[in-house]
Image (cartoon, rainbow, N blue to C red; front, side, top):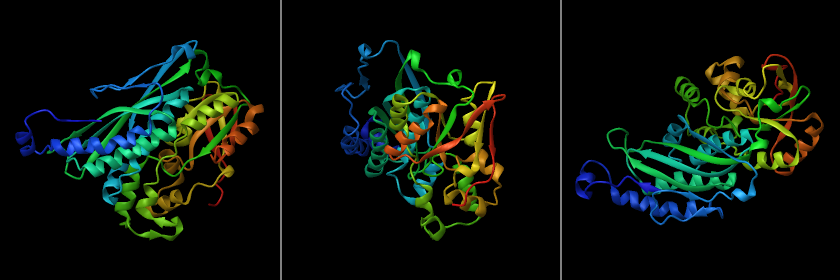
Length: 354
């Protein structure tokens, strides 16, 4: 991870950039990054680029997939709570779980951390979380950048973004064209709001004057810590599932909610009929709705409501898909069915009580 280190040390320090702190942050990151190394990674002693050897002999028609994302305003809660070790997992989840929607196996990621002031231990915590997310996803963290932006950001402020690359066989790309009438829709549970809807979360916290440091009995935890629960990373589970059953499509449920995201994986002549009674959203969603006076329609249009990833599989493989996911420790259930229609996703029924 390179630090922004151009210019004379004394003059740069006077302008608010601490080169020595950046170098110490890089040293602290190294042990975290080492955990993510894959055998295809090639060492570049200069540190200016991450190198990764693609074993083309392993594929008949390798197609590269790429995705980039951030974590939105969830970083502001991390800063308020002074808790920085999990926000990087959120970043990885947002990137790699977009990649696997195409059927791609994530290979590597790069990250970018911008901050008002480099505090080496804090930067190392952030990158440690990114490394943990990459470890969960089975991909390498092969490079990145840490940049100090005094004047543009307050000393305690930071933001992060990342980009990932994966590979999929050309004849194995998943998507709308594979989906068939009668397919089963399988839900994989989320760990909470993941990294979406946090502008509304913060609005609710502010408007209801909620204490992020208070223990909330109905959430069985400290509010801020519950809201910082890291995103579940599904990448390895989706790759494994694709290897075991006939998966036709995935949908990563992010901003916009379940219906809007799942409809992107449907062809124009098919619908997905989903039954709310098949699951109970985690208590955090009911808590936010209650404290914010937010109706179900707005909640469903903003949050994942407990479903973080959806697989559309051949009907005859539904039971096996659930077995595979259960064996991998992923809570999953039959959410609905693909029917004739017009490319819509419809939710019916009422949620179970949590």
